[in-house]
Image 1 (cartoon, rainbow, N blue to C red):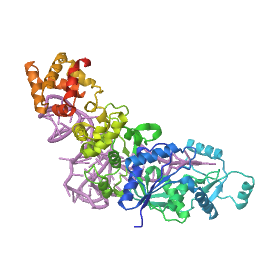
Image 2 (cartoon, chains in turn brown, cyan):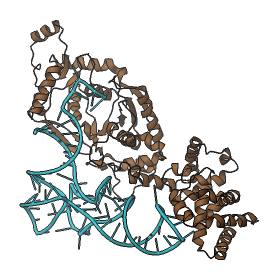
Image 3 (tube, rainbow, N blue to C red):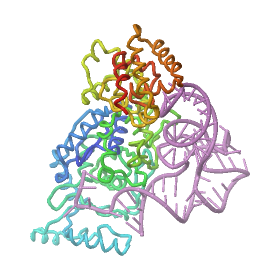
Image 4 (spheres, protein in one colour):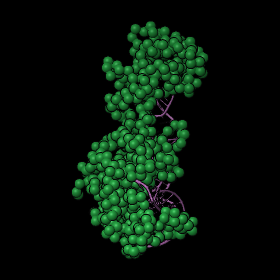
Length: 492
RNA sequence: GUCCCCAUCGUCUAGUCAGGUCCAGGACACCGGCCUUUCACGCCGGCAACACCGGUUCAAAUCCGGUUGGGGACGCCA
């Protein structure tokens, strides 16, 4: 196989969303696997909707995910002359023609056809067979025109061998003479895209199934332009629970890559989740290192059917697809603690929780504490929220914990300060002694140890659940434990 | 409406190309139990799917046809 060159060509009309990210990821994986190149091309020919902010957002999103590219970003608008030249060539070689029909006429015709439920709603070919004289006449009259591609009047069908879908064909007669140049002289996506892909020597086009009708037309364009047709692979789409295509417009932030960045996702965990949406290795593996994924990824194993991004709006427990959270949690629990430490550092800095000593003399404590608490965590955010009591005093105890473990036992108001005093008196505040004192106190007061321990957990960690109580006590340290136990009354 | 694509547990999927080893496997979610003084940890168990109808075959989730359902496209957007 000659050099593999793939591209990711987002149009900068909004942030990077998970559908686009998925496409980028598959292209990236394919390029890496074949020692090929990934070209990033910003398709900004729709000047009205393209913004710099959006370009930055897309680039940031890709960088955050760890998707790097080998060439670009190129900007489609910089190649406008090539696009125009290609259009001229197609006209002069008889592959395209000028169409003088007005937009209004065509809109009316289309609407009428749609309303009448006619099968033919596309262009009716009015200008396809204009004589040279008629054309000259209209040009003299300065009637505005668009350029349409002249679909060959052939029997049979055009087609291509899709890497995921197999052979795809469509009858020539079903294809309309589509517009390739606007009446203002600006070439359209269908043409620009092909011209750019030819120039960039793209070998494989991996994109969503929503492009399938474009692909058929573009195959025709490649042919007319005398260029080799690349290999196509159409990925299934990502749908919402109601099976509608996910979009920025109707789903908002939840489908934005930056949403996951802001909600404590580990970048690679999101990539891992996304790649599983429509692809599988063929066995039971679900968690992959980048190297491993590059190794086992193939276009042929991409699914044919659309998948559903399983998120419930306003779900109290799952703010996004439960599987995504689960995969993130798996990474959170298994990644080397130093790597987690680096990610948590960013969170803490943003949160005002960061202490320089965590990089210095308290580094060991910092890392071992993260290691202690991460077991039940799901996102990076949990360290600063659920796990806040380990790092700061301004934590808000969980209401459920307070209700269940404190308010039910009025006596804790005295008992916990008693325990504090005993802890304070301890010359060696270690796990064993802490446990002995707690149990002894419970015994003396004729209480179940759980009453004391659960009360203590609530006051000291603010949580209903967590690591072993005495591990937690040691991590938080004698002084803070004592202070919090003494101060129990403020929670009543 | 027309064209194109698709169809296995609630969700992501394995199995389909090379029919039998699949009264369908895994993961997430859910439910139950154990562990835990507590737990969106861990362990054990459970619930739960081949859309439907025909055909081919000794044998069909797998091949063929149809039906139904879903999605996409039908722009002087990309």
